[in-house]
Length: 165
Image (cartoon, rainbow, N blue to C red):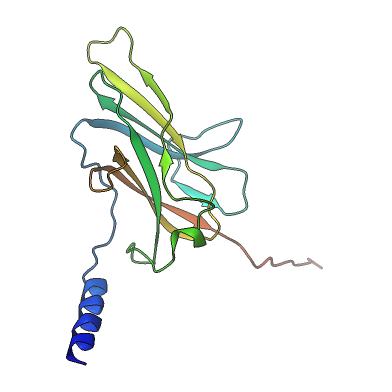
């Protein structure tokens, strides 16, 4: 019984001490992180990363890594509560398929003083509205995270109609 009480209190303490996510770039050689909504025709690079759940737009992230070597990068989505702490939802409740994606679009710099690699990724659609964090990490190692960026997906389930007389 004491053991069960200890386990329960440890879980509660871990949940209460969870740190909220913030926009971070802990990777020392990562530069020029852009995160913005886009669609098939246009992209507004300076817009906030906010999406309508049933809309045609998607989120795009672009970043540069200094150096002349291509790195294997992955990303995953983290669903958060209102305080930007990880929610209790399982991955399959807000993402279709496995929640680990490869970054396959990259370009090596040409004729520049500083060598770099430019990476581009499109965030897959999610199933539920809420706060999210996009985490980018190297070599399928989530402990080697290089970028954290927050974004919001909203839904408008209630439509209000009115008639002016």
